[in-house]
Image (cartoon, rainbow, N blue to C red; front, side, top):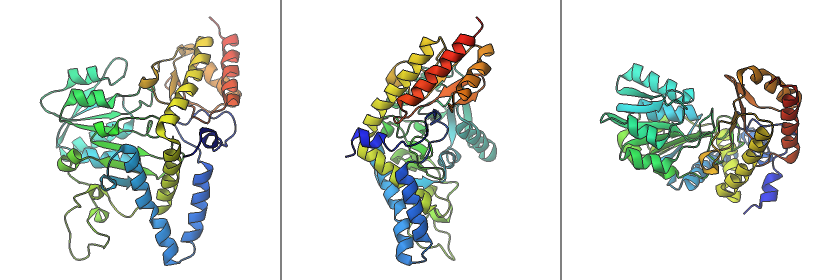
Length: 374
C-alpha cells in the first residue's frame, strides 16, 4: 500500500496546472513504463513482445478490481467514445440522454439512431443541466430501454448518483460515461450496466487508454454491432470462416489493441489501486473546497454543487458576462492553466495540486477582483 505522501510526490509538474479535467500530465511511473516497453518492442524478441502484450490482461484485471467485477466483462478500447459507440449502436428502443451531455454521448446516440433506426433518442433538457434521479423519473416512458449519463458532468462538475438512478430506472440499462470520475471518485459502478472511461485525465496514463465494462444485463441486451475480428473467442485469426462474436465483453472489440497504451493504463491503475480511490476522493474534495474558498472570497459565482458527494474534481466558475474575459486573462497572466468555454471557467485540481498553485489561483482572483468594475 502506497502512503499518501509518496503518492502526492508523483505529481511532479510545474505549479499552475488546474486543468486535469481536460488532460492529466503523465505520472513518472507511466512515463518510465512507456519508455521501458518501447525498448522491449524494439528488441524483436518474442519474449519481450509477449511481456508487453501481457499488460492488456493486467489492465483488464485492474479495471475489474476497481469496478468490482470480473475481467471477462472488461474490454480495452482506444477511447471512451469507442466504448460508448459500442454500447449505443447495439441498443434497441428508447434511449434517454441529456442534450447537454458531452458530445461522446450526444453524437453517438444521434448517429446510432440515424444509421440503424433501432434507437429512439429521448432528449432530457433540465433547466440547470443536471441529470438528477428526479429529472430521469419524470422523463421515463414505457418505451425507454436505456439511460445514458455522465458520472461527472464536464460543464458543472455535478456528480450523478448511480445507485439512485438505478432505483429510478428499474430494469432498464444504465450506460455511464465515467471519464470525468473514474479514479477521482469512489462510485458504485455495479449499479450501472455499462461503464466507459479513459486513462488520459485523472489516471495520468495518456491517450489511447480507454476501457469499457459490460455487465450481464448489457451482454444480454446489447448487440455487438461494431464487433470486428478481434471480437471472437480465442486468440487465433478467424481465417476462412466468420465466427459469431464472443459471449464475453471481448465481442465489443474491433481489432488488436495498442499494447503500449495498455502498459500505461496498467501502470496508472496499479498506482491508484495501491493508494485507494477513497483516499484520492477525500483529498480531491479538499482541493475543490480550496478552489471554492477563493471563489467565494472574491465573489466569483460557483455553479458546482457544494456537497462533496455531489461533485468530482471540477469546480466551475460562472462570472458575469462582462467579467469572463478579464477573469480568464488574470488566470492566464498568473500562469494558471484552466478551461474557458461558453463564458464559464472550469477549474480542475488533482490531489497533487500544491499550495503554490492554489496561492497563484488566489492571487489571480484577487487581481481580477481589484480591477473589476461593479
